[in-house]
Image (tube, rainbow, N blue to C red):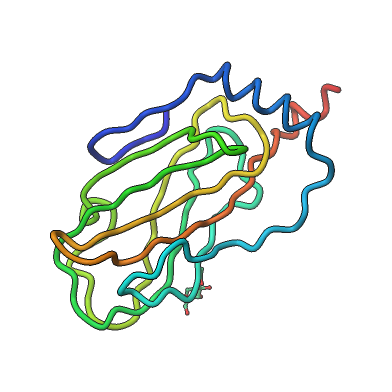
Length: 161
Ligand SMILES: *[C@@H]1O[C@H](CO)[C@@H](O)[C@H](O)[C@H]1NC(C)=O
């Protein structure tokens, strides 16, 4: 199970993921290069960067997501939604208090947001998409950012074939 800071979370079964991983191996050839991040919607925060580390990640790793941007006003409270897609499957989602994930208030000006998520001990390899969407409490969308990340087999697992 991933570590969650608050609120609700759900996961699809590992079996479903393994089936998806098999399907991916059959259907997908070499992966095209993907941009690290992109906006999924226009929010009041101007976003100028997003990243996920380590690259690639391995099952059980803590992934550190970074989102850089600029706010033209202070934010004192908000809601954060995070979900993860794997080969088009919604494999994880979490909804919670923005201020439990990042230190609040977020001041006006440059923002360096860091969000951490631990991968389950069994995580199929392949390309993943993390979606991070924050909304000001009772107010406008702050940001919606997609960040790609990749999970690889551990060296020991790779060596066994
Ligand atoms: C965020 O900004 C810092 C400082 O300017 C920079 O070092 C870092 O690479 C940026 N990260 C992203 C994901 O854009």
